Length: 278
Ligand code: FAD
Image (cartoon, rainbow, N blue to C red; front, side):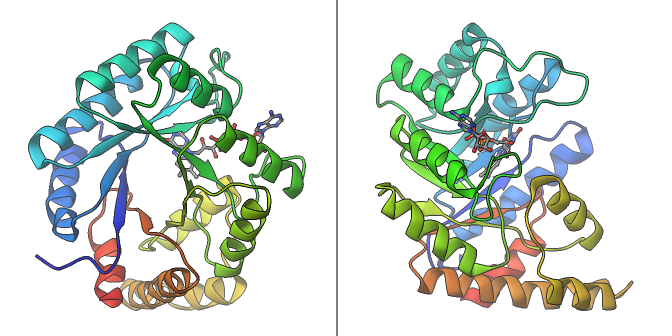
């Protein structure tokens, strides 16, 4: 089993079809070899999709012995529904959560009882005291809906002060954005760990789409290089793994406490980066 270079964690999304379930089983089996501190499972809003996250958390804990950590968003329903989910996670043995506002899916009219992630953090602390270690989201390149960067920073600090223990960032490819963000949050009095979220690259058009939605910038030089690879996926992936590994190295040099990988339930892109870090 390869020794981890530095503490890592992995994010998965909850599979919905038997094929996706099999893929996640394969991915979890491979990535387990990197001894993640935890793996987190994203949360989709609305109706029947609410069941997928708890079920995936249960399976990853029972089958793989991983510390599977549920994401929970304000879109998870009413106060009562969220309270029930929290009880369920306690029964599954969870001691960590990622608490988010979430985004309102199109066609869903009511966002639930909580407006901002800070409200959810406060609620979890009120109901469960210090039982859960709570991680929240951070945006080194500013959340796309924020009034401005200063307001976003203030809201982030307020969210931490509401009782969060740590933050994981949105992905970015410009290490300076992380350095400046961490400097600013320290100046705002936040001492909690800010873990960079790392997005390995395997599919350029998908990355471009995600980045437009979430406001993450793909630097022009990276974009031009990746476009030039055209259909040569192998070269694109090698280039991307080199670039993302260099980003990780720089982040660790400037004091990032650990690395959190957005795996999209694929093992290879994350493994390619981790191999380069060893
Ligand atoms: P908040 O912290 O509530 O902030 C949202 C916006 O509101 C920001 O612009 C902020 O500046 C502003 N704001 C905050 N407080 C106030 C206030 N008091 N007054 C005015 N404005 C305020 N989404 C999912 O649906 N499921 C997931 O599993 C998921 N996992 C994620 C994991 C990570 C690590 C990250 C970085 C994001 C994840 N997201 C997920 C996406 C996230 O839900 C969206 O980015 C969402 O738009 C914001 O969520 P938040 O928790 O950061 O919200």
